[in-house]
Length: 82
Image (cartoon, rainbow, N blue to C red; front, side, top):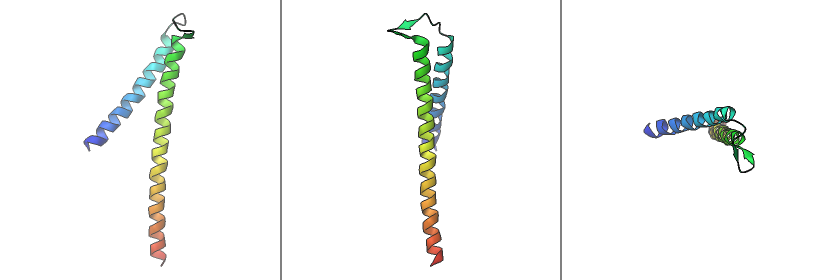
């Protein structure tokens, strides 16, 4: 249970951190430049990348769990038919 709560809090923390980066990018003046790129765009890209990664990981985990459950259900259905 402790592992689950830790994992959930880390995912929650990553979400809020990414969201904060996106909003911070919206508030940073466009005159601040890092290299040849505006700092606001960099912050928004990093925040968006973190959010996209979280969504893809969550989708993968859901699909993996669904595939396992489907395989177990298929095996149980096959054993009931014979």
